[in-house]
Image (cartoon, rainbow, N blue to C red; front, side, top):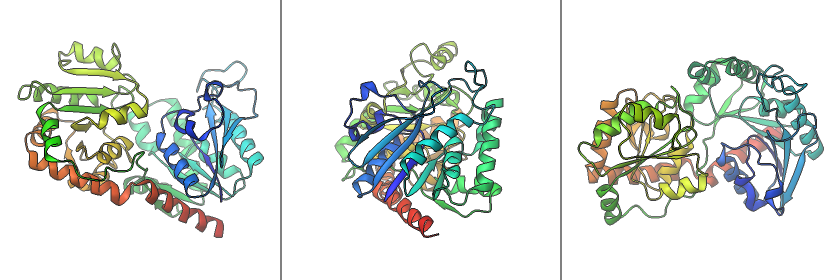
Length: 403
């Protein structure tokens, strides 16, 4: 089967599939490393895969895609206007015409390639390009535009909401990455919605962590947070205060922060310094996903204070290493990923005291830590392996083509 993937794909995430030198290629769109995982799994399953993505460095007046290829793989880079509201020379901001030029370029790339089915990721411009392609298609939703607008109020996000609502009304085939997101989308569509989660980028470790490894991790805890954006949605402030409180009982613990705005001198560090909670906090900032995975392998705990997530890949990555997770008990799809608290601890992430109590409970109880480590691995093996996610999508592709 020739499968077209239209979505935010970075060159870095698929570099090993290309025969070309990636230095001469556009960067694509970052932020969704799991798409690289899915693409590689589908190719390993014997499919031919084409990718259609956007790149903000290409001139907006040129609609013809730049292409690169490898064995059973091709990627087409289409231009994305730099500004969402402000004019881009003679072209308006992309949200003002609902990504008209970007969708037009993606449609052209799909038409030139003619896959058997188009699989769009995210319910905005990529979904519309798939729906307008006149080919069999599937739209996978990764976020709730209503919830996004709730926490990130702007004209841009309102425009994105309108795009998504149109997709929900018109799309013939939809999937959501968690039952929570399915319930959010179901309010706006009569289309049946399948649930297929995001895949882990690494297969879960074969064996459970041994007692020596667990004792070493608990003796000098490394707590990790991976968040992109300093704002109310990611909710880092209560986590900072909770860690500072936890340090009183375990002064050798360290907190390691990864993501945009969490670099040295960034917004997060400025706030931590101003509020006198920067002790033992390490600000790493934006970091390639491979480097984050390498760090997670040595970490003790993943703390995820976000107020709303649908199927956060960071949790699945940590769980694949047997690293226990603390997440929000009311944070969208987080409780489902953590099996309602059976594969990780759930906290009131708006309450620093409650977060600190959960951290202390986990890092001072070796048996609890061991149990959650084992159960997190079992959870990944049950739902989030590369083979199970790819197989679920393959079944939906066949159903869609049959219709």
